[in-house]
Length: 254
Ligand SMILES: Nc1ncnc2c1ncn2[C@@H]1O[C@H](COP(=O)(O)OP(=O)(O)OP(=O)(O)O)[C@@H](O)[C@H]1O
Ligand SMILES: CC(C)(CO)[C@@H](O)C(=O)NCCC(=O)O
Ligand SMILES: [K+]
Image (tube, rainbow, N blue to C red; front, side, top):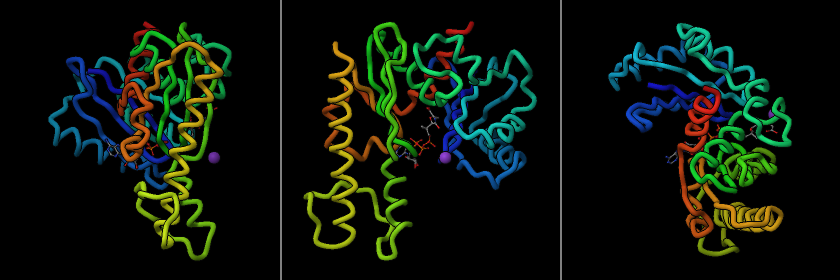
């Protein structure tokens, strides 16, 4: 079994890969108020419920875009020693020859998306990741990163609008029928959700034009599902792409 850990700004996602699939996935909030023992407690309950035996583990790979949470989660997996535990850092990303990006700056999740999508498509591709941030990561026909675009994720944008205003509430992320609403909730849904449909369409078109060729477009991130009107843009939707990329890094480094 292989464990891949993606420490994101909203969730810590832990995937257990066995017999050619992600057999179990544990999602915990990324909370700097939680210490290693709290994460460990949740992990132990999950392992018990799912009947997972840790001694079957060959390797653990961890990518984090929350530096302060990295040592906390590393402590949880303390029993995995050097050789078994692989941390995705600048040095490792440099070894993966990902092109003209700065490996010490690039987020581990974006690197994983790039490696994951190239492993999947073996050609130029764009990953649209609907997470805390809405990111576009492009790879060329050699699997090198051509470039990245980072926008606020749709939930992040909605929360920011609500918290920066006195009268705007947090709203359900649903796409309204029309671009103009007749009450506050509808109006916000229109501006945010219809707006994001346009943002993503425009970015994919623009990135395609800049890249040339026929890149595949793959969507990932839990919030991709709510953008039904965008689904014709995507060749595929794959929620586990970041985990797949982390796992593929292990094969590339072996
Ligand atoms: N399979 C799924 N179906 C529906 N919603 C999901 C699914 N997976 C995740 N979500 C929800 O979608 C949201 C986005 O999840 P995702 O893991 O893509 O990004 P995130 O955790 O917000 O981002 P980050 O990786 O930056 O922490 C989360 O709030 C999560 O609860
Ligand atoms: C863009 C996010 C927040 C997406 O999770 C993450 O990949 C990150 O913090 N990246 C660091 C900056 C960069 O990738 O250039
Ligand atoms: K920040």
